[in-house]
Image (cartoon, rainbow, N blue to C red; front, side, top):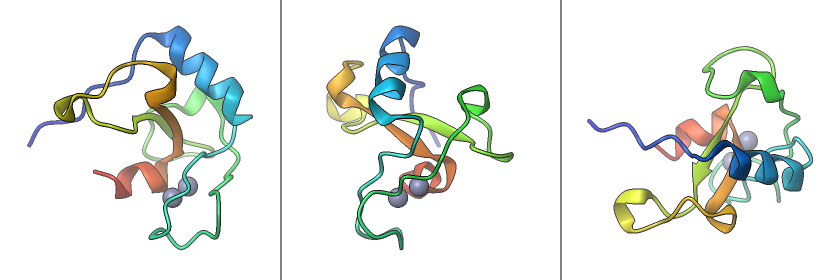
Length: 86
Ligand SMILES: [Zn+2]
Ligand SMILES: [Zn+2]
């Protein structure tokens, strides 16, 4: 069991956060939300598995699969959506 690498650097995560408008960017069709998830998130609750607005910065293409820490590879996901990608 290897935990996915945490997204860094912080500036990239902040830029992605601003792009997202503080809402989950997940657009997967298998999660039960229609279109974009759009759940409102709380900046201070990154990486928490409980609490209001918890979320994580997700690699669209995982590091193990050759993905990078670039802004275009960073996706802001609510915790529910993030945990379904693991
Ligand atoms: Zn989702
Ligand atoms: Zn979500």
